[in-house]
Length: 472
Image (cartoon, rainbow, N blue to C red; front, side):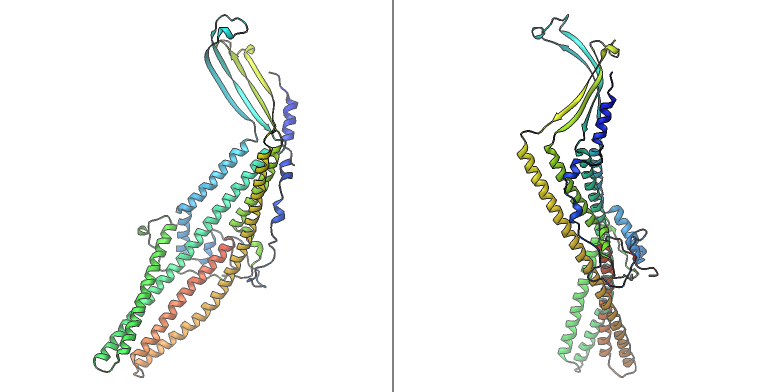
């Protein structure tokens, strides 16, 4: 078989050019990326935090082993995370299919056939119209990538695969953040239940005392009615806390891929309130997976415009067949049975101009849509970080004030108890002071959970790449 090495070498050089027509025809997405330098509106001006990822996961910042275990279980068993990972694997498979088109497609074939020809249709006589055919060989096709169409298609699918990977990371981060916030809220609601149960006991005791005073003629019906109202309100608040705790239990079980009946959330937890610096450079937004996904979608839309434009140009394909053919099996592999054909094929669009123009307008519109989506995602990311910074700073100040209030109410309740023990006041004064202390303690538990959740939201808004300063 005669070989034509110069032809194949020339085709290879043309198809492997660094600069492709498709890339020149594609819009440049770098022109629409916003400037992300500077700081956020709510960021402190003098803070220089570290921003490396914590080893093992961002949740390690809370130093809570039970939270670590729950998030590790979520990473393994959450069905939504499994589905997102499967979508990413699908995109990798599509990328592999596209990349395979860069190389020639080679197939083997072989056949054994018995054939009968029509004697009346033959141009020359043969000894018998019935005969056998034997063949074996290879056929190959290779698109000559003159315009960079195949390379650009591979690059497009790579962008889409990277977008799916970022989507998976974004979903996983969202699930992790949701679980952490529910974990802290569940603990706060459980603490509230304990405090409300103590308040209910005090309210019940208060009602009994007022009823006893009324029974002996020393009390007033209005005091009894007020005490009953306080008891009922406390019982209603206790039921609400139980209901919220139950719903959080169900939600956490769902995130872990379990039935609520098979899951027991931890009750005694001790998370560390991280010292979160609030002076953060806006360049951290580049680590947000949803922004990374939008960026890759924009790059994909840009290159699809170029791919659509090169559809107006002809396609060149190199086709070849080689093998052996014979009417008898004895001499099938003899040199005289060799056969081959090869050469280029041209596919030139002629009467499809309007169709391709419509497809091009569609691709350009999708690029504009991807541009707007990226800008919207970026602006929303900035808003989420500023909201989280504002919440965190506000909750920190509020919790500090609440701790001071709790200290004051605790001292007041202890003083009321001491005065009662020495006979300087009645028991009702102690009950009122203790109820105020319990209400303040419940509010403190809620604010602690809110501050922890605000820290989680800030870390999530920064793409899970946040780290507290050393020594915290």
